[in-house]
Length: 76
Image 1 (cartoon, rainbow, N blue to C red):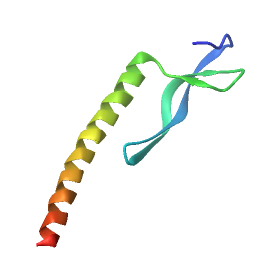
Image 2 (cartoon, rainbow, N blue to C red; image 1 turned 60 degrees about the vertical axis):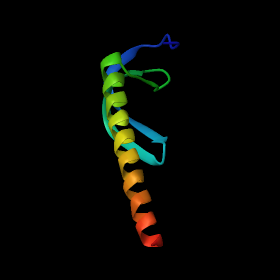
Image 3 (spheres, rainbow, N blue to C red; image 1 turned 30 degrees about the vertical axis):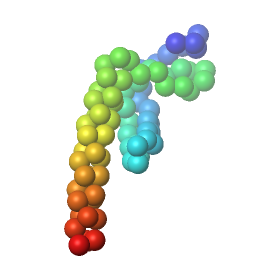
């Protein structure tokens, strides 16, 4: 962490736009810098976010396969 300001335990929004999808959480637990307002997530929260994104990635791959099969069927 680069900030030397006072940190307070609060919640903050977090968004991800990747691999063809967009996810937004309105309130995730985090440390927020009082001076700059920047959020710093602890390892536990970061790990949970990564697990959710990995699950979405897998589902997106599954959806892409279904869409590909449907497209091939329509060509016949």
